[in-house]
Image (cartoon, rainbow, N blue to C red):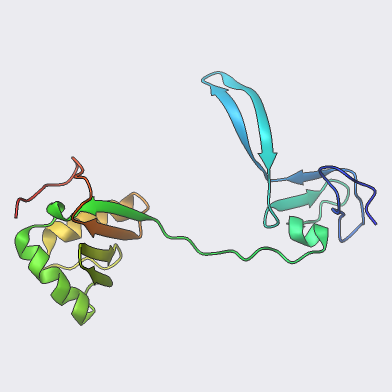
Length: 159
C-alpha cells in the first residue's frame, strides 16, 4: 500500500518501489511574459503521461507506475472548415466524380464535401492548392461547408 495520500497516491516505481519523488510531464496554466514565467498553477496529468523515477531513473507511464491500465490513446487528425465558395463551380462538379472514383479521399455531403489533404488531383488545381496549403498547416482533413465563412488566404467564387 502506498504511503502517499495526496498528489502521488498509488504511484510507486515498478522497478525500485520508490514512492517519494518523480518527474512527471504535466500540463499547467502559466502567466508568461517575454522575460519569463511569473507563476504556474493547475498542474494536471493523466494515466498516459510520462513519468521517471528520480531514484533509479526508470521511465514509463503514470498508469504503469500506478498499476492500472493506461487509458486508450485515440488517434487524432485535424480538420479545417472552409466555405464551398473557395472551390470553383467547375471543380465543384468534379469533386463528387473524383470522390466516387477514389481519386480523392473523402465523402460528399449535402452541404459540401469532406476531403483529405493527402491526395491532391491535377484536374482540380484550385482544390489541390487548398489541400497543399492546409496540409502544410497541419490539417489532414478539409470540411467544405456551404455555411462556413470564407478565409482571405483563398480565392472565392460566386456560383
